[in-house]
Image (cartoon, rainbow, N blue to C red):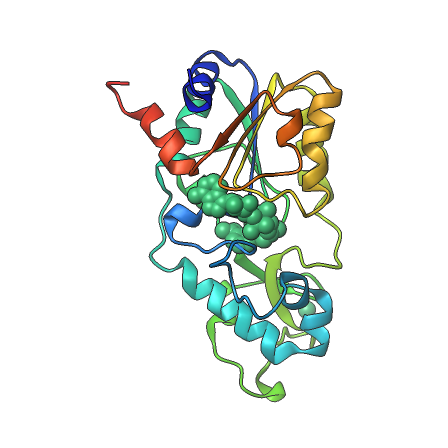
Amino acid sequence: MDAKDRLIQELRRVERLVVLTGAGMSTESGLPDFRSKDGLWRKHRPEELASVDALLQRPLLFYEFYRYRLGLLDGVAPNPGHLALAELERQGKLHCIVTQNVDGLHTQAGSRNVYEIHGSLRQARCHTCGRSHPVETLRKPVTSLSELPRCRCGGLIRPGVVLFGEMLPEDALSRAIAAVETCDALLVIGTSLQVYPAASLPRLALDHGARLWVINLTPTPYDAFADIVVTGKAAEVLGPMTRPHE
Ligand code: NAD
Ligand code: ZN
């Protein structure tokens, strides 16, 4: 039996699964990831654009980057991989999804217990006072500093994502950790596992006796510790699970 069939078999009988997803979960929905060869904006490193430093020091570039990323979400829909995970939750096998993605596609696919540990691109808030603002505010082109979107307090209106240089939302993170510590298996999908603390969750799962399964197009630092590594595309691997005849 190949790795993919073994994984499908395990997913049919798992009792308490936690899933950790990254940008590779959504590439088959048409959203580019960061680090693959077709990744977002190859000429800038993500740490350079998606950072507090960029927001404050190079705001025109920052807002252009996020306007571009918001534009990418238009017309994008969950793929069969997202849908398969939502189905596993309905079947009572999947406890929660911990996602580094900010695209909202797991929720859109019908998953309920989703911890967005890097926040959401579908929200906007004031960098200074935290007040919520319509995300449409971030769609307006900004060509000069006087056009930067501002809150009534004078603070900059910024996307509801976690930027490099910021803490993760404590609530989502502590729930994610608690879930990983008590799962039977952690399934990691479409993440290069290079961004902490998400990248430390597989280790935590293993230390608590859970099995580790990986679906990724390219090798990850945890492949050597995983029970099953499926080298392939998330939607192609998971999609067939929800087709009735299979
Ligand atoms: P990453 O770009 O570092 O890694 C993506 C991984 O997915 C790569 O290892 C790649 O080989 C693999 N991959 C690509 N397509 C795949 C597919 N169809 N099936 C399986 N694997 C596939 O992404 P990351 O680890 O999530 O870290 C990047 C950071 O960027 C995260 O913090 C995330 O918040 C953010 N990000 C989010 C989105 C999104 O919300 N869709 C998109 C880009 C970046
Ligand atoms: Zn404000």
